[in-house]
Length: 357
Image (cartoon, rainbow, N blue to C red; front, side, top):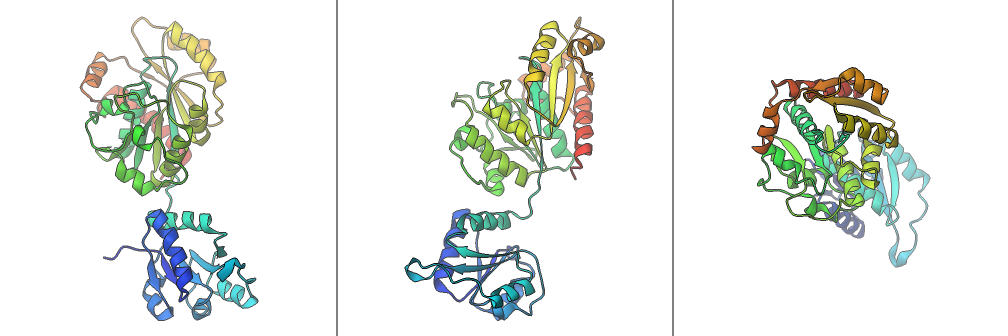
């Protein structure tokens, strides 16, 4: 079966060259048609239809559809395109065109529109952050378990590591040797990144896409690269889980600015309670904030922790020596363990409120 491609209908050679140049910049193939007869077979199935003003009148009686754009261009010598005539507007409205644009003024807009059509409908995925109140809290394990559980439930999920000195979250998934891009390969990413290209580039563990740091220090995470990747992640995945570095900086600001929920993992110790008491007020986050207590033997009780922080915990993550041992082997807690069940319940509680399909 032929891949569905955007459709360009025009007999204007220069307009065709301009659109093909923009499409090449996005990695999108274009189906070309010079007139109505050659375009009819693609009219209903193309993800995007671009019609040059030279052929617009030919389609005034075609069935109305979404995702139609009418395009004009500057005249030779750099003269501006003539004002859109009443006839052009009438024909554009008749076929349900969303926009009437002129090149080169609309180049950037058209590039994004072409890229969107090549990816299919945006998923508008939810972004959640997992943060440890102190070192060793187990936030990376919680993030990995949540992401893996979401993927196993049929949600396309991306797990992102933001700690350049954490050794790489791919180690928790025994994926350190898996081929695919790490942050060092995406450090120069800017602007708009195709969600399909990102997914194809990343290593996957049982379907879960993972963006991790490697074993060699590659410098701090670049804020522009993170913005670029998160934008693609929201378009291409149902859920993006961020293992958030413990620092109130530009990286945290960007991640929390897109996140709809955040989980803070707090061990039941005096030091962790003190760290959480300092951290929580400093977090500029207006979404759903959920506290998970990581239980340790002879630690503070849940009541003590609640009094110290002035808020309650969603659940308690049990202390289990086998979890640490499994992590050394690149194994996260299995779905039947109490640890995983708590993580999954916490995730589902938030996802249900977000109405993530």
